[in-house]
Image (cartoon, rainbow, N blue to C red):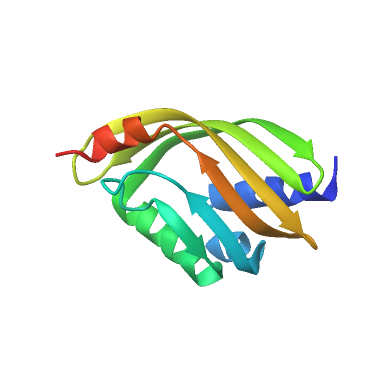
Length: 131
């Protein structure tokens, strides 16, 4: 297993135990975060830097409850590590849940996560946010 895969395993483990400082410490200071989706999903969009990532995680926790998250596979592509997973979230304001398969591409530089690109089912999330 490569050092980059270990970083992503550490990230997911820290997130799972709610250790947000350990999560944030794994990101480069100038991390480039891309999460496309329609505006009805409040937490989507591009972000830059650790502070913006911290704001994302806070916003996600305020808006949604994570009912299930399952890592299905990590693919080692050298500087890129792809996480394939499945999640079920519940939108607090509507009470609606949504499930989706998710792919996240992490690009690492000098042992830190320098870029993140999400691929999700935005239609499922948008329907759960719709009132």
